[in-house]
Image 1 (cartoon, rainbow, N blue to C red):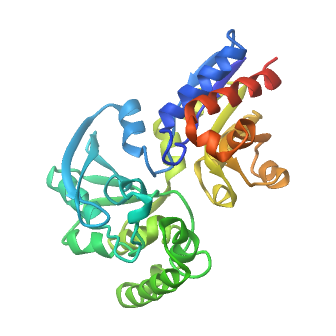
Image 2 (cartoon, rainbow, N blue to C red):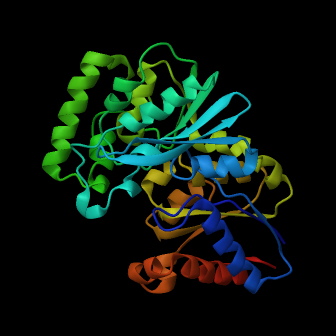
Amino acid sequence: MRVLIAPDCFGGTLTALEAAQAMAEGWHTAKPADELVLRPLTDGGPGFVDVLHTVLGGSLHTLEVTGPLGGRVTASWLEHDGTGYIESAQANGLHLVPKQDRRPLDATTRGVGELMVDARAAGMNRIVIGLGGSATTDGGRGMLEVATGAWPELIAATDVENPLLGPHGAAHTFGPQKGATPADVEELEKRLDAFSAEAGPRFRDEPGAGAAGGLGFGLFLLGAKRVSGAGLVRELTGLDKAMADAQLVLTGEGSFDWQSLRGKLVTSVAAGAAERGLPTLVLAGQVSVGRREAAAAGIEASYAVADHAGSVEAAFADPAGTLSALARDVASQWSA
């Protein structure tokens, strides 16, 4: 059987490439005769630059920028054929802040703006900013303080379709996972409301405005065009071509939940597979999407590493090993 393995990263435990390799190792153990094609992916969040550099080549530009809490961090953007690809999480990512140090009211996107300025100074005529995995909820305010003046073409590659405000907005939906208390969430919502009312209220309800803590909104103010991050990477990595020869598609992410159904990578992969009549399986750290919802998104079945390993703790203790073990057992069920 020809199996296409195309996962996203698994939170802060495995990069997309590491996840793909772990799945392939487990599958090969059970079914060594199967042909495995690895296409690690990203929907614009962590791993965006790494995945594109692996596929496209190009030159990496590395510099120090302002991190989410004001300290200096090292970040890289990719230059390829006149386009600069920026991974916002390299400057404002949640993985840059230890859990005990998270201060969502203070987190800034300033470093993202510094990366954008560096790409513009290098002569890029198009800049693509991948959004996702952020520690920030400032509506892009920090970025806008730096990214002033005229800009080349800007593309916001969003991982979700959430608006800026409201129950499905940046603060209420993503604030708690960034360390925000209920009181913090209300304060962040108030700040976003006031800032957006002054800066550009017409963009508040745009799909993707709430991505990366409202960084999408800030980019819209600069004239950025929104595209699906998953769809963009799918095109750039030649995923559709790889699907043409596959008989089964394997994807995955850290948590397969309701957010996954709002334009994230696994559903983009499943949509492409469904167009070709291919079954898609999801291997995730944890699964909270029901069978009906998954089936409606074109997903044949989903499996949780935590359930297979016996607990979340066991899965976190050996993320690659437990994912590989799950893939081995799934292969035994699905490969003829």
